[in-house]
Length: 364
Image (cartoon, rainbow, N blue to C red; front, top):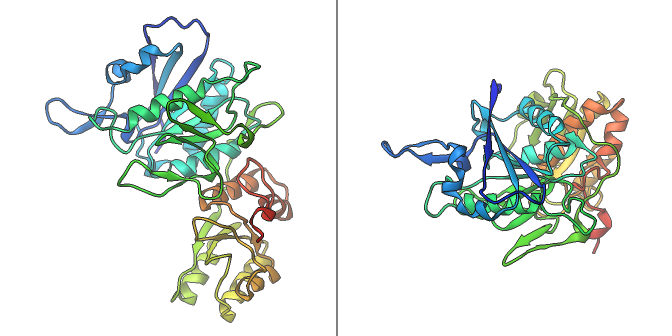
């Protein structure tokens, strides 16, 4: 599914924008932008020209706000690599015109989009904040209103020098600001939809928004985007009782370049001969295999147990404490920009955008 064109809405908050701060809101789709039809009661896309009626708190913001809506709007299950490229180009096109960017996105694949954009947007010096809602913005008990307000405030916050305080891709949800490539969706039935198990929240909204400034990621260099992502990668999830045919079928996917191997615990896999042989054959065939734990917290340490040591011996790359979402999008990115398989292996083990922790942090 492609985006045919955009609908642009300029929002008049009624308060003069004396600060000169302006935020571009990009609405891709998702629950946050839905409302109940007055006649039928069914959910329909929200008219952002009426956003002040739904979120009157915006009247207090000293901001210039513009909304660009995807048309057609996307369920986040339909978001793919081409949509990440569209978002990257939009941010590039308007980079000099706005102080920050807020992307409204469905929650199901928000962590994938946040992870992908963290790699595709190189040398960011402005905030790109993804948010959404578990309930539509027009619902009486919606979380969408508070998520949007917090995201806008964070996106417009500057430091003592007047520079953007947050200069990375983040997810703002349920009063917390999380690094985008550290977050996972963990709930679909309450407002605590996202968690970051291996990295603390960057900020928390209470009476004031309290930032952990020492945790914020900064880059140096000229902003640029990468719109090419290599999709010749797969996720191979291990489970007790898996068959050789299942394993072989995935590893023999045509044009395969990379595999995220979801292992047990600290990076362990069955020591069955056919498992080791199949993975070794893939590695020998220049396929990059990255070991990512199925656990939500902790990290892969391939040499810790015998069940992980055999993976290291055949050339499987340890993925540390990366999320699956970060690992698969990073692999797509690296295959698009790297010159060799060895270069991909090297960079998969090093932090590019704060997606990976120093392994010493977990020792002991």
